[in-house]
Image (cartoon, rainbow, N blue to C red; front, side, top):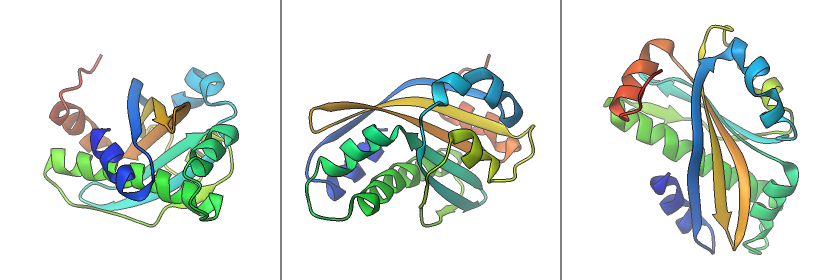
Length: 173
């Protein structure tokens, strides 16, 4: 997340720290039963598809109040929604680029889009099969002296999940 924070520093008028609190891998079908309560209220999402040898979809979701606080903290006069899509899109792109570099493959990230819907609905939009692996992380974003909560979800090609986790030195249980 250091890379994401560095890239955000170039876009925003204040430093941003991003910490990963928890990361879990599960099938997309298990998502609803395992963390529905944690995802409740995270209705301000930004989706970005990525293609290449590493392909899939990334989602950053926040509660609307946290998203608004992050958007407005800069006070730069840019429309709030544009700012949120830009900030979240930057985080998503840096995560995908880091994953692609860890796997030594190419990945092109599409322009991020705003998705004002539940996490479950955003993930369902991808039309990925229910046995597709979902990597979900709980994040804390500290920006402008505010502590904000977010979720990062990655749907990637199942055959690359083990290789990615191995490249990132993450233990699989």
